[in-house]
Length: 434
Image (cartoon, rainbow, N blue to C red; front, side):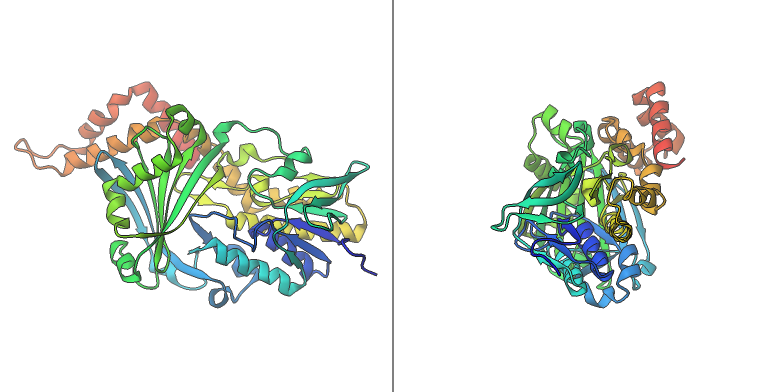
């Protein structure tokens, strides 16, 4: 007989990781409760980016016609900006606009709610507006959580924590150690309304396509970070992500950094006339593989952002499908551990092993040197301007004739100094090529 407030599993956080964990457990016949602090899933989540379809294709084959997708991303553009100049590396493919799509833009408030509904359909109990303050620990094992609701305590043999980048429960459980501030950035995002036709004209896409545009440069205020613009159906997600240490060192607010980014001519031309619909800020984990915490203790597992599963690799920014995959792996591990009756750390150890064998850890490990590369100020203050200067001089007519590229490269990149340039070249090659 089921007892009130006693479940097979408790999932804390109804983002992509938590909803997928609850969905998988419920699909396997487990009695699971999904707790969400917001009024509805997605209400507290900030997002400026795209979702890759890898996990959705596997688990929800009809998602293309059911999920609240904005635009499939058919164009990837990277802009290097410096003093009114811009150099753009551009890739587009019509193939990326064919279902089931490689990736697409979404509103997290709609997408997260849709994903949580899949968990509810499978049999999970969704309880929104619920803050979890603490864990219940008995004989060294987590056996439940303490909430601010009237009923207070909820109990289960296993708790899956998907409570985000600054996971309170992960810290209380002793799984997350104190991280260097260099591993964190602060992101801010606006949603600007624009007509669909205007978006398609400015971003050179058709009605069945979308664009993911990333920007790097030496911003006014000398803040180290980058900007983004993603196309939705009738709006743009526009934002800036800055390293926390850089904001503090330069004494610049994240709002000032966003405004400086939006004043750049290349950005201003894309977003002009947009009417603000939404605004928000959020801490972003950018330490990658090096900041991954312990994932398991007796009766508990960490998934998604709480597990540090974000790849911030400059031109690559991935996290949502990593979160979804981790949620499924944790749910399957929990189900098998419940079958065996062993919810100890050893009984749950298959979860980190499965995660290590997956594409998630392979990607994080492959690009593990990128976070350190992106702390190098020359990546923002020197190289974007050098690239723009080379392009400007190459395309400028001169009575002496056009200069060839090698002398131009020597002229503008030589200002760095040969030793520093070689070190940076090796660091970039190690981070992105080898």
